[in-house]
Length: 362
Image (cartoon, rainbow, N blue to C red):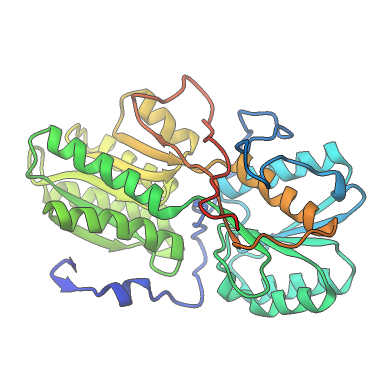
């Protein structure tokens, strides 16, 4: 596997850094600067799949409780949507919810968890923050007997569970779309990849795209590490330069960006260049990207992270633990994240998946 002629081992590809830079809120995955978006479904609807022991949304044990939601950036559109859903659920079901966005300050994230644990919060939700970076906060919560659940955090000792999409499935859905569309248009085209190594879910998504590219012999014309401090202009400007390097009808066929706001930056660059021979694939299911698909724009596909399902599962699991149940045996819980293309994009709103997908529930 190579990037711009430089070898990159699978081991080094998975080795992330401990911190994250300001200006990039990924993972669920969204970049910074967004606002909360309304959900297409009623917030209290049980959007998880039927037939599994932990799927029914049940918030009875949360009534009268105090829950804190903390993360390095709660303003990114996808994460903000989940916080909004949880806030609406708290009002509907009679529990208090406080949220703190720590502006990529991991020390503040850990301190917030410690303060909440020490002041008697009943549960903590960690959003969009790698679990390996919150060990101090997890330890404080565990000492106080306060359960901690996460979404798009990964798993770590002390975290009762994490809810998210299976990024290997999401990544391979994107990769399959890219390969099939390139093949259908004659083949021989290459792809550009925009990634951000410090976040595990973005590494997993990218690995799927690069693995299929290697398998099918698709050239990777560029692998660009996005600047965390200016992610949107970085993607947009780099894409513009790429389009100049590979003019209309040239080698470039597709652009993959691991998150939708970055994906839409690439869409904007392609539209500004007046190009119709390059398509974009990304992950999140943001309205702007869905609209580009609806309008026949450069966005070819997106994978929708179903934040209605994620929010329902997170709060239901915390309610069960508060009510005396043991945490799930398998701490990583997955919800379906559907691939949306021109073939299945709805006329409006953000589509949902099929809900909780228990690969092994114990």
